[in-house]
Amino acid sequence: MTAIVGRYEHGEFSTTSESASRELSEKDEARYRDNRLPNELSQFRRGGVSLLFDEVAYIATKKRQRIAFDPDRFVEEYRSRGQDAFDDLDGQFAIALHDAASGRLHIARDNFGTRPLFIAHLPSGIAFSTTYAPLCKLPELHPAFDVAAVRAFIERGWAPAGLTFHRDIRPARAGFVEIFDRELHCLRRLPPQANEYIQPRDSLSSDELLSLLRQTVAESLQRSQGDIGVSLSGGIDSAAIAALLREADPRRVIRSFTVGYGEDDPEIQGGRATATHLGLEHHEIVVGAPDLASIMQEAVRALGNPGGYDEFPCLFALWRDASSFVETLFSGNLSDTLFGGMPYHRDVWLRMNSMRDNVSRKNQAGLVDVNPADQEPPKDLLFENLRQSLTDWDERIGAQTLLASRAGLELVMPLSKRSLLDLSLRLPAQQKVTECHVKSFFRESISNLLPPEILQRPKGIQQLRYDADMRDALLELSRRYLTKDRVERHAIVSPGDVQTCISESKVNFTKARFQTLWNMLIFEIWTDAFANAPSQ
Image (tube, rainbow, N blue to C red; front, side, top):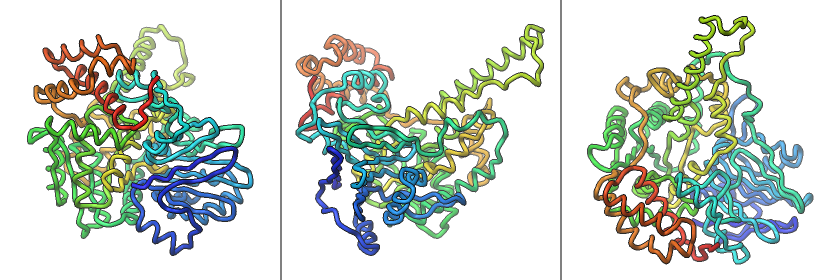
C-alpha cells in the first residue's frame, strides 16, 4: 500500500508519496479512485487549497440523507463556511485540508476512528500518514518510547487513547477536527456532539432503528467495489449485516468468512449456521498455535500501534484469506458500543438497578421524604458510559481497517454513520439492556430478519484456545524475544517479572498469564518490526 505522508511546517504544507499530487478533473478523479488501494488518501488541489481525503466519506444533507463525497464541492463549502464545512462529513473518513491563504491545516476523522490517521510531532512542525511505519522512519523524529503507554499496554492490552509506543507519534483524535496554524493547535468536536444530549427518557421505536440500518447498509452496498463479503462471527451483529445485505440485493453473491480455532469453536459453529440460513457462500479459517508466530509478527508490522490480545491475529488471518475472494468486506463493528452489547454494559445495568432498588426500599420504609413528582430519575449510567467512550475513543476500530488494508481489502462498517450514533444517544438504558439480554433494542429491531436461534445467541469474544499448544507456542517465542538482555535494554518491565510470568505459565497457564505474556511478546516484536525502534 502506498502511504502518503503530509508535512506541515511553519504554515507550509507538502506531501510525499509514490504518486505525484496533481490537479484532478472529474474523470481523472474517478480513474484515480478506481485504481487506489484501501485506506490510501487521495490528493486534490484547487486554488490554494490542498485536500487529502479517504474515499469512504459522505456529505450529510439537511434531510438526513447522504451524498457521495465530492472534493471540489467540499473545497467550495470550506471557502464559504470555513471550519463548519467539516460538520457535514459522515460515514468513514480521514481527511486533511491545508489553506495556503491562512496557513492553517485541518485534520479530521470520523467519530469512531474507522479510518486510521497518525500524527508525528517534529521539531519544526508535524507530519501525518494513514499508516504508522512511514512516520517512524522520519529522520527528525525523536526516538523515544512513551513509557507510560507501553506499560499500560502490557497491563491492559491497549495503549491509552491518544498515545502510541512512540513518544511523539499519536493517533489523530477521532470525532474531532484538529486545527493547526503557525503557533496554535486547537480541537473542534464534530457532530453529533455527545455533551449536547440530555439523559434520554422516552422510549424509541425499533422500527426507527431498522429503517436506519436498512438505509445505511443499502447505501454502503451501492458504493461497494467488486465482489463483496461479510466478516461473520457467531454473534448477531454480523448476522444482521449479512441479512440486510441479502435483503438489499437478493441476487448478488455474498461470501461470508469466519475465523476460529477449530470445529468446536462457537464462532465457527455460529457463523456456519448463519451462513446456511442466509444462503451465503461460506468460508472458514482455522487458526492454531503453529500459525501464531508468523501471524503475530505480520500483524504487528501492519498495525504499528498494536493491541487486542489474540483478537487481531485471528482477524488478520481472516482478512488475508478473504482477500482471495472479495474486494470489499462488511463488518458489524460498533453495535456493542452503540446499543450496549458488552458484558460490562450488563454490569453497569445491574448497578443502575441496584441503585434504583435502594431508593425504592428507602421510600417504602419512609426514610426518604420526597414528592415523587419532584424526584429526578435515576442516572442513566449506560448513557454516561457512551458519552465517555466517545470522548476517550481508542484505536481498536482503526486498527482493524489497517489490517484489512494490509490484505488489500476495503473494510466497510455501516454502523459508523452519524444517524445511528444520534439514535444511540437518544436511547434510554431500559431499552438497551434487560434482565435477559444485552443489546435488547438491537435484537428487537432485527427480529424479523433472523430466526430466534440466531437472535438469542449470547455475546462472544474472539479468542484462541488457552491450551498446552498455545502455552508452548508463547514460551517458544519468549525464548527468542524475552531474553534478559532485551528486557533490561528497554527497561519497561523488570526481568524478574518476565521470568515469573514465564515460570508460572509453565505450571498454570491461565487467561491472565496468557494476556500478560502475550503483551510482553507483542512489545518486543514491535521493537524488531520498525527499523529505528526507539530507546529511552
